[in-house]
Length: 215
Image (cartoon, rainbow, N blue to C red; front, side):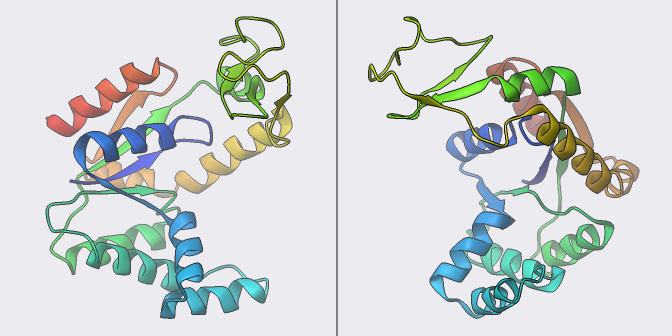
């Protein structure tokens, strides 16, 4: 199966994609990761992208489409793809249709993780990690058992991501709505869109997604 996972930053797309990779052997196609890998590997498309980025310009749809085509060509016919962060525009959505059909594939599902914006702000702004081992904590949902001491390694040093603040989170939410608004109607008209409760427990979200993919 080939699916698109949609949802604002912090909705849990990465976690759910990782689970699908582990449980179903699917391949996650994150355009950001693929771009960095292609640049590092020095592939023809990577070199093209590097030149564009060094000139301070945005990478074109043509380059992104080439990256996706390259990745799909390296996958086995029985491996499904998870598109993460792409497509974001109507032009990209139409391009993806062509990329898939030219390789005998089709898009099977578009799954949107629905979230409550205020609750998501609380979820993200409360996050912090152990500076030593990276164990994750939360102001409300997961405090260390002993105050100020990491449960895993005993370190007393913690850190927060500078962009985990309310203003940044709400800006990212607004950007997400603006970017996905154009593509959802396209997929809804084709009956491909299914929604899950992104605020549910992580395992409950996984079960909802599995149910959609199995039916």
